[in-house]
Amino acid sequence: MIRKTNQKKWIILAAAILLEAILITGTGRLFAGAGEAVESLSTEAYMEWAGDIPGSTGEIVDTNGEVLWSREFRGYGDTYSLVGELKDVPYAENTAALLMEGSLLHPEQYRAAEGADSLEGTGETVVLTIDRGLNEDIYQYMKDRQIRSGSALFMEAGTGKIRAAVSLPGAVPDGVEGLPEGALLNKNFLSVTPGSTMKIVTTLLLNELDEDLAHEKVRCDGRYERPAGDITCITQRGVHDIESAMGVSCNIYYGEQILQVLDPQADKSWEMLENMGFSREPEAKDVDGLICQGSSTDFDGSGSFSSTWSLIGQGQTQVSPVDMCRIVSAVVHDGRAPEAHLLETDKTAYTQMVSQENAGEVCQIWQNAYRAYYPAEEYHRDITVAKTGSAEHQDGVHKLLAGYIESSDMVFFIEVADYETSMVDPAEVAGEACRYLEQK
Ligand SMILES: [Zn+2]
Image (cartoon, rainbow, N blue to C red):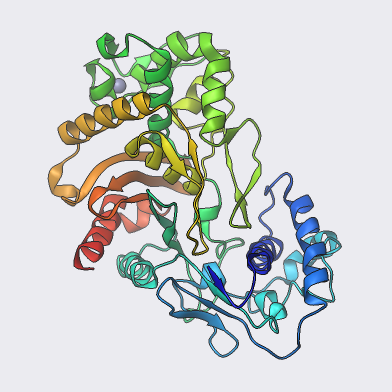
């Protein structure tokens, strides 16, 4: 719901904010198709704003009406990456990108260097789905725990409403001096290497395409030698079925099953992957008009190392946190995934992402795996299921966690990108959110 005016203007605003962040921070590999989308939005923007009364001021508020951004109020650290204007960010080194991309914009209406400020005069109040109390609590917790780079997305599984989209580092009141390029982009709308959280997706594929999955076992000796390249596993060795393999995240089990079950059914696998939001090349998507990176994987059924490795969650696979939250929603809600929302709305569209039967079975496998293999003392009792992941990056290991909190119908996807310095497990962040939600 948007008070006083229509939805289109917010869509433009959201797109403009993210686009500006992209332009200014110069994240190079972004988005096939984003330019085109922005061009058409900008044309609409030009038409709309031409009729605006100058001088009236817009506001952005959270789901409870708390002001997150206005002419007088420049935003909180925790929501800055959602609504902040970035004119204070040093961008001189990216002027070339601005000039190159700037031709897509109508400079009379939107000034990249001023960001959201240049949209003043619209007189609107835009209501976000964000619950600032939750957002701030998680943000503050992550900061207090010395996490300097990370993200936490919390979405209601039944409605698709994004209640928290925390991204670190933040800005205001901390300032932006010395931050690396792209640091202020809200990481929840950029795709990440999912690590073993990808095994949620692969389990859905296997359960759908392998009639005998429940009875199959694979021995893990830590290494699976193949001419195409060895697959290694550092977790608990021994004979695994799907539940224990998901529980200990056995790469050998999944590698073998991908080769035996999914490679011969690559077309069917891809149909399912597309339903879950994946494409073969990175593509731009939108969340209520906010342009964000989608999910992609180079699985091709060839049995190549890269293809197999991608469904284990490493290599070229990139997952959008928003997509991962939708996938977990489908698992816990009979295969139905809501579209994701950042704008308050009474209407949500759903897609049957996977069959009801598949979702139910995988939900059971996941719960059994979680209960048997995840240490209860490290996971808040309100967490219904969770799947860990870790992804190797040049700057060290990133730790990830996807999961569900049934008592508040909340799915989440968390990344701690500086695990090697902060040493904070994402489960601790999820636990903090549980404590907050419990008190509400
Ligand atoms: Zn293993």
